[in-house]
Amino acid sequence: MGRKSADRLLSLTADADERLASLLGSQGLDPTAAGLRVAVERGGCAGLSYRFDLVGSPETDDLVRDRDGVNVFVDPAAVEYVEGAEIDHTRSVHGTGFRIDNPNANQQCGCGLSFR
Image 1 (tube, rainbow, N blue to C red):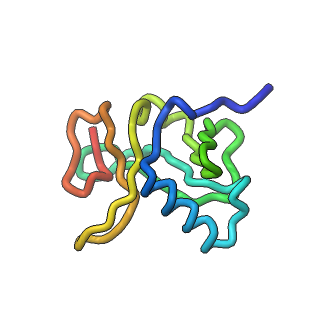
Image 2: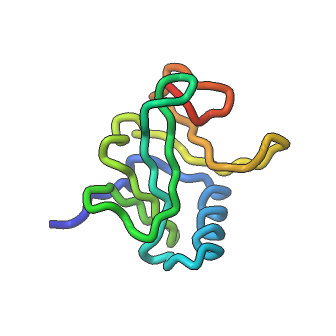
């Protein structure tokens, strides 16, 4: 049985694709197998927090998004929270990092990493 696809689950901006490819290369990870793993966990100021990890390969049950040579792995427990979301990479005076524009979030904290 094949792995479930996350291609329609979420999208990445061009900046996020570019930064993710750069990060994977700088970490010495195989870009054909490695990627960004997206999960959701309890915590943060709004109740739930996104978790982003660079990993060498997906977990067995992760959904996989492979587009333009960049992999994103989605924890199955996060699917209901990230469906339709867009991941961006931003740079500001407050720092750099991945952020999610999530239409499912009813409330979001100022940092953009915690939501409800």
